Structure formats: C-alpha cells, structure tokens
Length: 537
Image 1 (cartoon, one colour):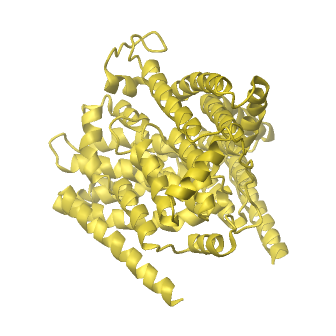
Image 2 (cartoon, rainbow, N blue to C red):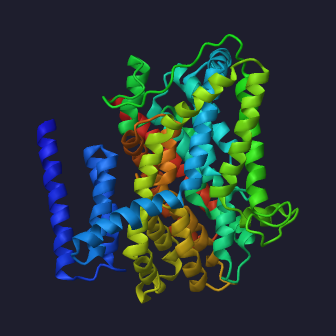
Image 3 (cartoon, rainbow, N blue to C red):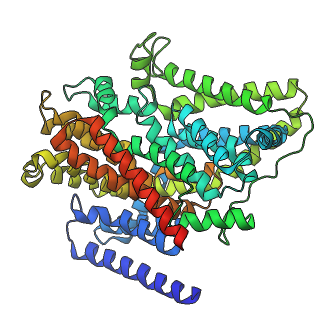
C-alpha cells in the first residue's frame, strides 16, 4: 500500500513539474492570473496527500519559480534561492531569533526542574482531561498580545499537564491554534489590532475604531472560542482527531502515527518549584510587551528615530514591529531568567550555556518549515502577483452587484486567499483597502464586511498547512505538523461553514448579537449531533 502511494505521489509531482515547465516554455501569462494560486495549492495538496511537509513545500516553491522563469533554468534556480529561500530567511530573521530564545528559555526551565514541578502540581490540582484542556484554553485566552508568543508559551507551559492526562499532541496543538489567532483578532491591545489599524490608514477610517466595531461581527474568531469549550466539555471529538484522542486515552500513545516529535525528558531537579516556571513566563510576557511598545515609540521616538507615541499605548502598538519587539523583549527576559536561576542555585552557569544549543535544536523543524512556507508566499505574491489577481476579482462588477451578500462573499475570498498564501496579515492587508472602497462610511454593511475580511483571514490562516501560526502551533504542542493540520481541518471547516451562514444572515439582519446567538446554537447543535453519531459507532 505504501509503495503504491509513493508511486502515485511521484507521478503527481512529475505531472505538476511537467505542467509548470510547459506553461513557462509556452510563454503563457502567469502573473496576476489564476496560475499565481497554483503553487500554494500544489504544496498544500501534496502535504495532505503525502503527510510530508518539507518536500511538498519545496515542490510548491519550484513550481512557482518555473512559472516565473519564462522557461529559463537559471532564472528558475535564482527565483528558488534568491527570491524564495534567502528572502524568506532575511524577512523572518527576527521571528527566528524569537523562536530560538524561547526554545532556550524552555530548555532552562526544564533543566531547573520547574517543568517537572509544575507537572507534579498539576496532577494534584488538575484532576481530569477536561480540566487540562480548559486550563490550556484559559491560558491561551490570557496571552492575547501576539499569536507567535501565544503558540509557543502556552505549549511549553501546558505540555506536561496535557501529557499527564493523556491528551493527544494533536489536540493540544489544536487548542493552542484555536486560541492564538482568534483571541488576538478580538483583543484591542495586540499585535493584530496594530496591524489592522496600520492597514486602515489612508482609507478614511480610524484604525482602532474600525477594529473595535468589527469585533461583534467577527463570527469565526468568536465561534471558534465557543466551539473549543463546547467540544471539550461535551467530549464530542470527531474526524481524525477522535482517533488520536481514543488512542491517547486507551493506549497512552500521544501521536497515533509512526512519525513523532520527541521532546526532552523533564528534569527531576529536586530544587525546582512551580514558581520557577511561572516567574520566567511572567517576566517574558512583561518584557515582551515592553519591547513591543518601546519599538513602537511608547517611551519617545520609535526604533527608527521617527514617530513619537509617548505614553500612547494604542498608537505604540499600531506603530510597532513584532519581528523586532519580540526578540528585543525575549533577549532581555532570557538574561533575567539565567541570572534568576543561577541565583536560586537551580543550575550552574555552565548548565545554562548548555541549554543554548538545546533550545536552538528544538526549534529547527519549526524554523525550516517557516522558511519554506515564507519562500512559497514570496514567490506566489511577489513574483506571480496572487494578491493582484484576487484584488481584480474583488473589484469586478460581479462582486459589486451582490450587495447584501457581499460580507459572505468577502469572507469566502479572504478564506481562500489566506489558505493559499498562508498569511492572514497579508490577506487583510490586501482586502481592507478594497473593502473600504466598496462601502461608504455611513453604510451599515461597512463594518460587517470588514469583520468578514478579518474573520476570513483568520479562518484561511487557521486551515492552511503553510501558515506560520499553524506551524508554530505544531511546534508549541510538539506535534507532527501534518497530523496537526489533518486533525484541525474538519473543526476549522465546521466553524467556517457556520460563520458563512452568519454572514449571509448579517447582510440582511445587520444585528451582530442575533447572528452570533444563531451561530452559537448551530455550533452546540452540530456537536450534539456528532456526539450522537459517534456514540452509535
């Protein structure tokens, strides 16, 4: 069976590459046409079929490079290396640094015995699987500043707790992913709110006002949070996740596949205490927030010596750059954590330095996938113009004529664009100016349409295997990436369909609370039906 599957995969890959070469040699126009969406679709399709993400992403990158090369082998290689991989590494260097530092802090906490101490505490205070999952959800809600920070921090803290209660790694990664982007998208003080505010500049709208007014209509984000709580409390898992959960409960196997992500064994340092885990996390949160607002100019001029948002926290968040602010804060937090642990005599200086390469190694898989996913986005967006193609669709007469159904249409377009490109920020960055131009400030559909744009961006990002948030949720939950994607997809699609129904209704009812109440009822009703169906099996 495996041999047949491998042969089919090789045939598919060769067919894709042959098609790409044929299109490039024939001189067909692939820029700003539907061809621009083919490379990410190829990567995503192969990842889901083969369960192997590295080669799938690389084939997607090569396909896009061939499209953009015009039939030239040298140009294709240059696109892969320069425009794709090198550009991706330079563009995400700040996030790489943040990942490495966070990995080092986790290794230090583990070396000090704090992780094991927290696990012992959790066994006596969190007594059930439901309690472990709800605790993970609550922690995810509390860390609303940034999705990257959320993914890795929640995973590091809750891993020993969920492991001890036999919660599968796929379920842990879903809980992380389902609270990371959705909570950031409805929190007025977050890096996401800042991004939305900055993209709204020049549209004639107040960025933060736009963000706040869009929150009640952000059905996907709000219903995802409802879905998670209902799923956990009702024990209504379905699809591939159900197999992972049953296997974890009955056999103690947290992966359910041959491939697995092995983490460090928790150190049994008798000096370690729960506070030795909590304090570093608190320090990391506080200093990271300070780093974000400092870079944004909260204490005077920003990092570029330009804008001054002194004592204006909203303005500072709107002006910050997470790729600089998070590493800035994390580096200072790392120094504080090392000094604290040496002063507590939990570790020696030599042991602290030994944790540096361990932290780096732990984050290598996430950084590799992130590099390749970013390279694919660069080629698809910058060389092939996928964003321009989607913009032309949105501005077409057919889209404009749908009127009350436009929020639902915008939601679908945002979902597809974010899914294909793996970026929610890039998606709403493209669509916000377009949506604002489609509606007047006095049009009641404006904020509904904006919410649909933001919600669709989160939804598509949530579903996409090449999304950075999805990748880091896998890293945070120490889960095989493809397992996380395949188990999360049915849940995300369920909430997406219910959200789409709510946007269709919102276009006519134009009342967020009525539509949201209907959405909650549909979520609970669907899970009730799925539980009944599975109980009969």
